[in-house]
Length: 345
Image (cartoon, rainbow, N blue to C red):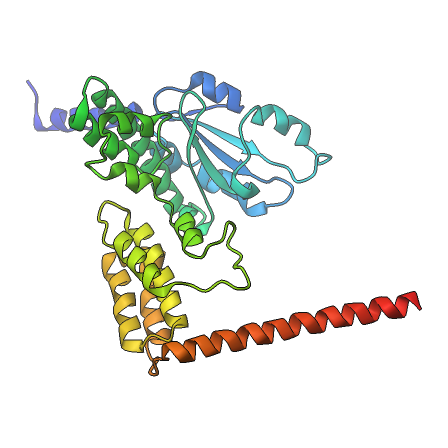
């Protein structure tokens, strides 16, 4: 007979067993972690023993905490030191611990890096924005759980997509591509085979590169403008509007393109009320992105432009600027020549 008291005990035992269902393991080295890794992969904490004291302090308050272990699910956790000086005490052992694990992005510590059981890196995060500023790194714990769960979802969806074909498969693969972690190898090729006409828009969403779009608009391979470059404002506006209206693209990419148009519009002396309209469209699309958060400030800074220059005035201003720049270059050239003449004499 199960009494109310025994029922409570059974519930408590069930909760205890459930807590062990997702229990992260620990490993001493990255190689050992990969050997032990299952479907939840490996979560590695990168710290700098001889140059970043905070990353060392967080080993106990954050990395070895029950909260971090719970967030890591069944992943294998490993702490990997990255020394600044090869001669520092412990630097030799660090190489063994690291093995063939890649360095953290930009060698920033502390950094948390994520790998699947095959050693493929699928995510990483660092800094106060993602770790949090408290000693327990509350935000970091949340992000560990977020990425491990995203890996689980990725594996689940890939298994679900495998027997399917055509649009049914494409829909699932598009969902995989949208997860906040690195895409599986060859995912885009599989998506192209399943949706060759890009009916879902997922292919162009993930192939679109806002930076390369900007370079093309500015006729530059590297971001440095040519001295005689003049933007075709009407063509730029047409191209930017087309991208901004494409709902298949990610909001951040659409906002980045529209910000290019906003910047050029300001250089063209477009009236403030029109600029405000452009900026508010960026904010309305998604006010949670960096671009969306910037929009209210841009409205205040750029939204009060009153005078609209005529095409002739804009041309005169450009010519005046080019003449001034040329004068500066010639002056520097003459100064160099004068200096060279003095040295020869």
